[in-house]
Length: 221
Image (cartoon, rainbow, N blue to C red; front, side):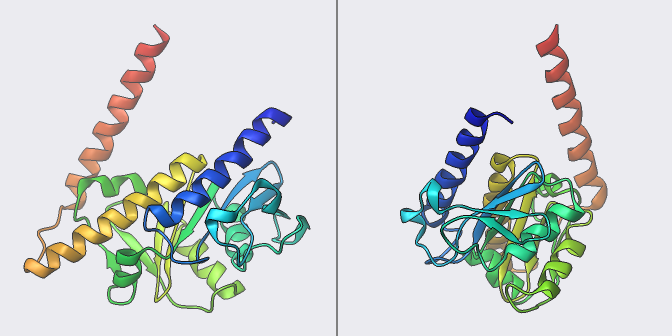
């Protein structure tokens, strides 16, 4: 990655961080965002309101979670981010405390297939990682286990984590996870939600792949 590409990526982190409150994904200074650049992690700092974050506030870590650079102290969830990068193919990680995702994480064991777009997380359900103290290695391990075959998880009595092949994808999944949580919560207010089957979600995933491959092929013709 050259200097211009790195600069653009750092600016994207700042833009996404500033969107967090506006999009209802965090309250106050909760939550955090990171990206992987080679063998380094760039992560948002701790205890700074998102609207005030600048590029110079971002912190650089190694893949063990040890801070290498930055005038600020890295987010307390640095161990969580580092563990996700070590155990998945993530290029970016977003951790939120969004309202409906956090609410459901206090009450359910799994977010079921309330809408077919759940396939974007890699299956027909989204797990809930059991509670561990924020910033702890134990929480990092629980989250990594939950993400072993999914691109998002709820955190018991805490929030949610998503990851993607780009920051755009990771952030989009965080927004989608909150939307799915809200739909499920609202449906429960009306009675027993009607859920999709594994076969129905798999059918959507197959169709999405078919359309993507078709579009990619057309673009090269």
